[in-house]
Image (tube, rainbow, N blue to C red):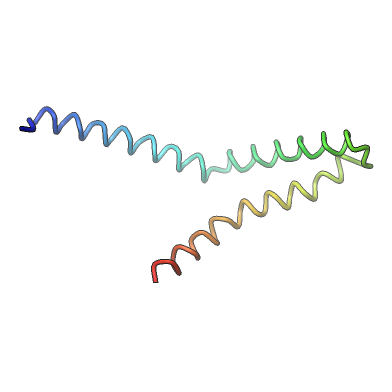
Length: 88
């Protein structure tokens, strides 16, 4: 038989899990994460351009970086659109 203490313990576990999930979601949608992705992508592309001996790596790395960054901004829009159509 389940006691009140067992139920309280389960509720505490659920609340702790909900707090972790909310923190993860906040990180996934934060501008800090998006800017970090932007910076890391730019650095990786610049390094690739240097290794490949392509010209103007600091300037030319902007285009693929912005393309990738814009794709991360549009994903939530398309996800919501897909979810709304999936439910129908």
